[in-house]
Image (cartoon, rainbow, N blue to C red):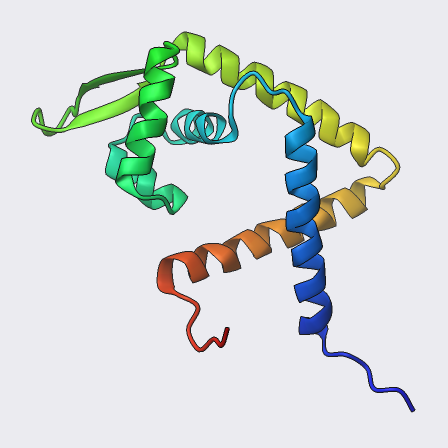
Length: 153
């Protein structure tokens, strides 16, 4: 009787291939805004003005990385900076109307593309994928923030 591989073996393979195909698809796209800028604008739109440290923590990034990404958004006129309302020594970042417009345009384009890719899936199947991806992202966030725990290379 053949031995069945544990689920972790299949998950490992599928995650590896997911990363590979996401890279391949990303290289073929010519988005008007890079993924990092888009993600920062999405975060600012959803959660309001934030300090660089808050953005870095929320996205699992180093503060210097976020600062560089924000500099590019600033040059494009997509963000503005102002004093924190509760602490004038601190600065918060917020999207400009041009930034929100650019982000919304790209979001709509991406959502239309995704809807087309999954057009032959039922609404229930699409919802199940959303739920599983949400759970996967939570696991990955915990690993990124808390560390992997007991792991071997």
